[in-house]
Amino acid sequence: MPNIEFSYTVAGYHFRCEHIFPGGTAPSQELIASYPKKHPVGGKVKVHYDPARPERATLEPGSGRDDWMILALGIIATIFGAAFMLFGGQHGGPG
Image (cartoon, rainbow, N blue to C red; front, top):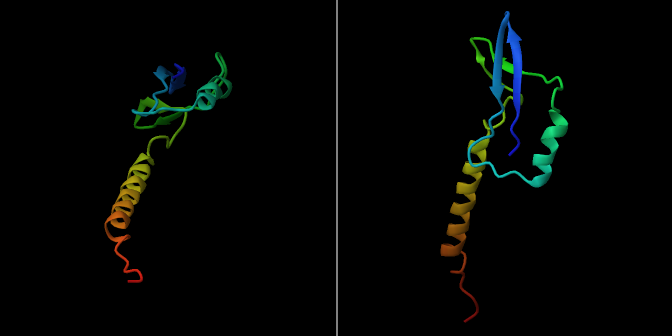
């Protein structure tokens, strides 16, 4: 994973943060290669910070918030798969 550090100033206070990838992330090589292009060394970036706690910031708001949906879809697919395996083969055929 690329190590992305950024700094920003809010109300005269200087902050430094590191972009944290969600736990368990296993991105493709293409995604890893895209980060230096999106966030070049010494380049300007758009920082999103919490106005109530400006030391909390990110470069990509919303990343990691929808991870629950992946888990939910996995659970649903597992339930349907198990139901099909248990009940799908019980059709009466010609005798």
